Image (cartoon, rainbow, N blue to C red):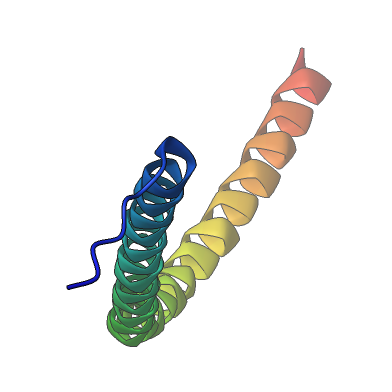
Length: 95
C-alpha cells in the first residue's frame, strides 16, 4: 500500500486553495445580490415614473384651471387700480 505524506507546504497550499474558493464563492454571492438589488431599483424607478406622470398631468390641469380665474381677478384689480387713480386725480383737482 502506498501512503503519501504531506509536507507543511502541501497543507498550506490546500488551505490557501480552500480559502480562495470560499472567497470566490463569497464574491459571486455578493455580485449576485448586487445584481438583484440593481434590478429592484430599476423596477422601483419605473414604477415611480409610471405613477408620477398622471400626477403631473393632474397638476398641470389644476394650474390651468386656477390660472383662468386668476386672470379675471387680475383684470378686476387693474380696473380698480385705474378707478382709484381717477378718483384720486378728481378729488385732488377739487382741493
